[in-house]
Amino acid sequence: MLSLDPLPLAFDRRDAMRAGWTRHQFHRRVAAPDVVEVAPRLFADAVSWHLAGRDERHRALARQAEARYGGAVVSHASAALLHRLPSPRFLDDAVVLTGDKEHPVGDDAAWVRLQRSRLPDRLTTEVDGVRVTSLARTAVDCLRVLPRMDGLAVADAVVRGGVVPGELVAVRQAQARWPGARTARWGIGVVDGRRESWLESASVAVLDGWLPLPVPQVEVRDRASGLFIARVDNFWRGLRVVGEADGVAKYRGLDGADPSEQAVTDRLIAASIRADRLRDLGLGVVRWGASDLRAPGVLSARVRAARPTGPCRAELSCGVCGAGLEDCRCAPALFMPTSAQEAA
Image 1 (cartoon, rainbow, N blue to C red):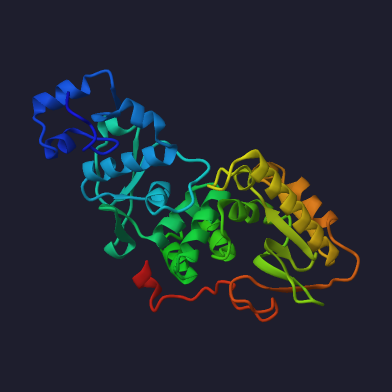
Image 2 (image 1 turned 45 degrees about the horizontal axis):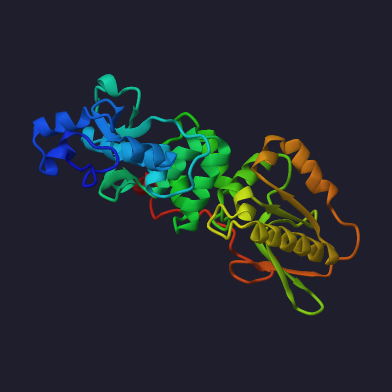
């Protein structure tokens, strides 16, 4: 029986023909019990498909969708996955494509969603041989249509990768009358590439309106000795409170760290000691995980309740440039491209 190893995770007859199969061989092979049809006229090895993660499966379908619909480009959350941006917590199963031509979807409607809009070549790029929307266009599309926590995580990662926030402004201006444009405007206003994880970005999105915007990635030292104490995820300057967005994966070793029971215990003890040292310097400390974002009112009350009353012995600086918080210029400025129209 022909091996499926040379074929992509999700494959069609064209892939099989490129691998040297005949049509007869293809039809016999996909009828075997170890092959599943994952979408109309798309197939996969049953075990490989089952073991693949949600994102890997979506990327496999996105590659096939772009090949099937010539002229259309992978966009929105599907493009974010191909760009290897933070994976949206809430991901539609359908692959999203954007193009300026009408394409009948037929029986592909269940797994392909076509968006029709003008898409200049300058707002497209290629990732692993697949045409996708540019980073700036992907970020703005995600800000418009995804939940705020997911959209901001994508936009923060795009800016962290070097895209100037003004490029996002220019793209949004071209979409001023599109659904979700107001949400995109909010997201561009709070975007900050210094945030390093989905949870950090999601926390800002959820707590917006409940608390002032915190400064991300702040280094804390003992003012008297100069001893480095910690680099914290968030710092509310007016409240003098440190915020640590600690996902479960960080402690259980699900992010690649040692998952043994002893290692997990050591990480928890280290985090507790670290928090005590921060409090000794006169800072409030609050830690939370993703589940706490379901109750922003409760979380914001915890932050406010942690506000210290004693003297502060902490020296605070930006964890990116090293300058004191008063002198730091890392907050993203909305520098515009030479021509907003050119970027749009």
